[in-house]
Amino acid sequence: MALRVRKAVLDDVNNIAHIHVKSWAYAYKGLMPDSFIESYTLEKRQTLWSNIIGRNLADVLVVDGEAGLAGFLCFGQPKTLKGTDVYELSSIYIDPANVRQGIGQALYNECERMLRTLKAQRVTLWALDSNERALHFYTQQGFIPTGEISKECANDVILHDIELAKDLSVK
Image (cartoon, rainbow, N blue to C red; front, side, top):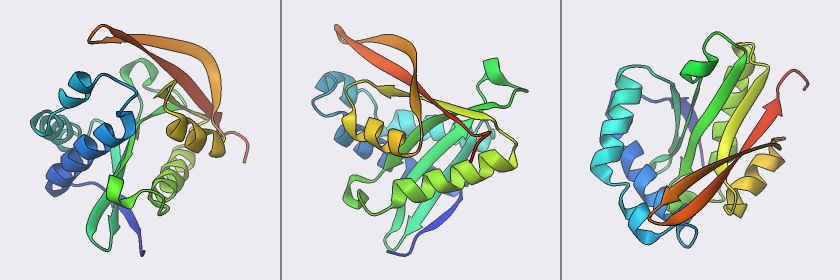
């Protein structure tokens, strides 16, 4: 599959929202309550991504595959980190029909290239502690757990997110 990574534009919002909803359900099925997964509607994702892309609140990358948009990644500096050399990878989602085709790797490679251009020294992310697929991918990229844990209540179920970080000051 020929892949092209590029910055997202407003015209991508609907496709990004569709991928977000489908991949959210795919990634978290059995890891979160179904009702919590289903609360992430297409309309909510369209509003979210219209806001992020339209107001340039973060960098959003997409992958164009042979059949159209196949995945996206979002990164930037949260308000608490503005002006530092630390960035956060907040989202990476691949259309379930396109998993295991190198799309996540292509997105992450471009993200890291951009972060190095920005002189970032560290990139962090949060991942659900039971999402083994995601944790495996991130550790393959060189991320390691920081020891920080965040708890979230999802319909009477406590979810644990763990923070991972990668030092970009070394190649």
